Length: 209
Image 1: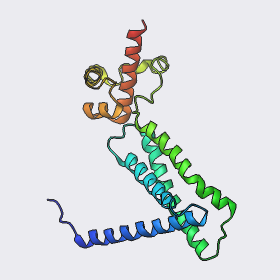
Image 2: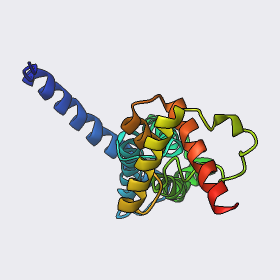
Image 3: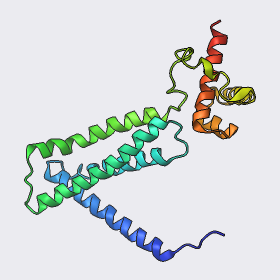
Image 4: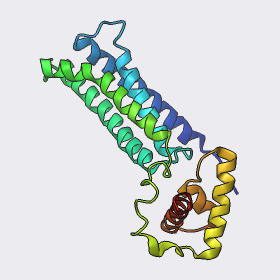
């Protein structure tokens, strides 16, 4: 039975989230102005950092992310975006309290945020468009090393995997991924990886007799 919603908890989280978002936006906006950004462009700094955090978190947690490398990179970027927001707000409060002076390194670092974020998100977008199959070594490079893995999943599993791969290629125009194969065959990730290597090696041998 599904648990009932606790509206006090939801209300508390909503109020806290709004307060944090408004406070963070104000701090980063003021930091941008203090480091020489025009008033009209100053909102771009908090928008950049917030969009950075949202995008990285989305790629990290989304079930549609088929690449383990993309998920790892997104996780570290999400954590980095939160840390960047914390550091930016802390810097502004120190400046406002006249504890920290606006020196040229601070001006350079704040100005470098948008292009740095653009570069990181561009790389993340490329990784997000890949899957584990795309990141695998070229077929045939591990033939000798994995020759004894021809029977890694047993003949029945290999045939089932080959059928699943053929069906996936026919429908999507590309090989099946490890995670999709693992779900269809109900095997572990390691076993799915072994079976995928066996399939790649088998296809390589058939294409290069």
